[in-house]
Image 1: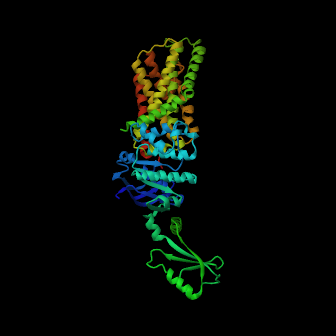
Image 2: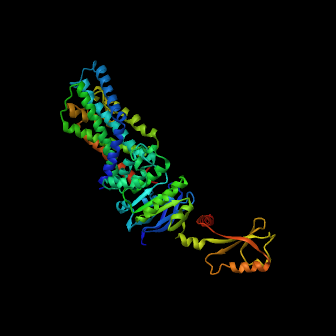
Length: 308
Length: 253
């Protein structure tokens, strides 16, 4: 897929002297779901702010669909919808009025049928004439998505879309995002929830201390950096790992009742067959076994820890 | 030009005004009429005429101007401050809309509101005193120019302010005193020569004088100077607003 967003050498230093972004280079492909992961203060919101025109970059160049975000800001911004992290709404307005306002602000002529479609899709139609202040947190979050979609954007930024929402609503949000992607919308989301990225993203970017430390296809990332473990429940406890098994990456736990073998998923051979043979030779037997695979969260934590 | 955006901002602001009818329309018109009744009746019974004009009628242009200045400033400052306060300003900043279009929407709405209020006061005043407008065209010109200029000032205050208190400081502590001391209730010529000179440093004098001239063909300062000073103030406000958007002052990080 061709790149729809291209960020080159982007840096941002705030007036306070704090450098939020350092020489960021990033490409987002047309039609993908890109998850930007990073701890608090990593620079995720600043990066989104720079692309959407809310934050003035200190250096660098950003193009969207080949157009410069400064020189050609009208064309660029018309393509982008932004759902901010904070629940910023006009509390005295109604969903109907505020979504129509957003559409007008982005230069689109009134289209009540389309606004109705968006509100219905986000299950807000019944509340269209209620004051926003009376809506629940989840409804307000959906309303922000409706506002961002009001002008039919091709690219949607979701800054922590499920922060502070319950599990059911989170799954509802994921469903909405999937539907949008199916309609051809490119989606960039930032999240604290690794589970969210693991569930939805095509590609993952990890940002820490203002630097992109990794951008990778999610599946490839998990394959490359993921570790697998074979856990063996021993028939009889061991006091130490027998000398004949010293060549393996083994860990003895659970008071000597559990032997864990960590192996590389990329290796041509896992070494499991050899290990089991050597265990038999050493007189070590087991009553049960299971395997575990490291999650994206484990990979993320390892990456960020290395950065520190 | 993003006409739809200007229309959206303008419509949004006007509907907000309509929602708070009592506070936005009835209250300012009523308080101005109270000034008119109290000053016109109480003081008017002792000062029968100023420059050959009935005192009750003489103060009407000054009162309209006072209303125009305070309402333009307050409406425009609140209009742009509220999205900053609630955080919804992100939408304006990320929309394909230029600084000029944002200003046009907010300032246009604030100016429209204050012009409507000014006209309402004029109509109400005409029920109490014989009011004639010698130069209706220039009356409208002064009305519009002042409403736009002070709405621009209000817009700037709304961006500068970082709290509701600051939002009120300029209208209450600067504009209202300048209006009271700018010849709303008296002719500058009634003051001793020294204070006449001091008063000429008050920009509001030029607005009230020009506006009053359009009614009664009497003025404290030359009408051309009044027009020039108002236009100059408008130009300064526009330059400041342009600088704000160019630098992102208090809008962008």
